[in-house]
Amino acid sequence: MDFLTFLAIYIGGLALFIFVSLFGDSSAFRGTPVHSLHWLFTKGCCQGFWWLLQRVCGGSAALSLGNASKYCCEKRNPILQLLYLTLLAVSYYLYCRDVFSLLPLPYAPSWHQWTGAGVLGVCLLIFGVTSAADPGVVTADNAEFHQSLYPYDDVTNAQQDCDTCHISKPARSKHCRICNVCVARFDHHCGWVNNCVGMYNIRFFLAFLLTNLVLCLYAVTLLCIVLSGILHKHNVWYERTPWHSRGSGSLRRPASRLLQWLLVYYPVPTMLLVFLFLGTLMIGCFFAYHCSLIARGMTSYETFKWLDYKDHCMEMAKESRPVRSFKAWQVWSRWRESAAVEQQGKALMSANLYNQGLSRNVADALFPAKAWTARKQM
Image (tube, rainbow, N blue to C red):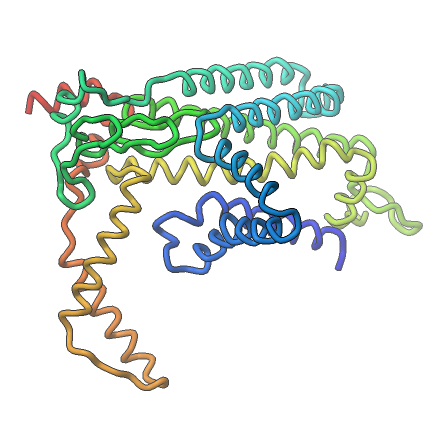
């Protein structure tokens, strides 16, 4: 196994781990191996470690670790915010020391130092705005207003009271146990901004994802140009052999040899490229996922409710059909029965009451005040 194959396997495994850990609990992967791997990475390993800690260190150590875990996972805290700022600071320092110092190069002028700092500054600004923005906290004073915005569909949203806030919960709202408040059109709690994402700040959260995606794309593109210029400057693109000289008949080095040369002589820019490339993929997938939710008039929290509702309808459809048994070799008949159950279950499902079409869904998320005014005038 050459070095490039080993690196590709390592990057692929790391990307799979990050993807499964972040998105494996999504409704799209429920009942699949991805969801099982998510449980293993996020809960199974923790439960195994917890069991081992109790056996080795006793109950006191387990209690201390439990209190620390409760603070990190169930209380509002700035740990992930500090981690985000640390990642930005370290990455920018390494970029200035090992990438910007190489400029200018062919196709990479020195003014990239200032544009890079500008993009980073915009990211920090949007990060601060998203962290401080009101997600749409529902109180006794504004509960009546929020109740007038969306009707109850009795599928994913039923009328009920919040036992903690002592108010009637508006449709599409949820009580966040981390922030200990009810949030209108609740999407999820984001530890990276230490804030809930809801009706009022979903647009800032999307801007936060978009600016970080642009920052990573910009850094990856510039790194590719810089590393390509370094290879060109040191004449590393071509093999030096006794019977070939650089030109039309020269031999080009394989990608694995080029990568090995970069890791030996320019290790920091090369590893930065790998790290930022993975970050680009991760943020890009997360941004695309939230855009798809907005286009369908849904929230992250509602997708799980819709999955439970779908399972309920499928179970009703299955119970309404006669019981049939199939032999092990009757794969086609088993598939047809499963398809018939799924089709019948979908027929029982209600449509999404909050899906008003692409343009209105986008306006509802990005310009909520105008959307409310237009809805009340209808």
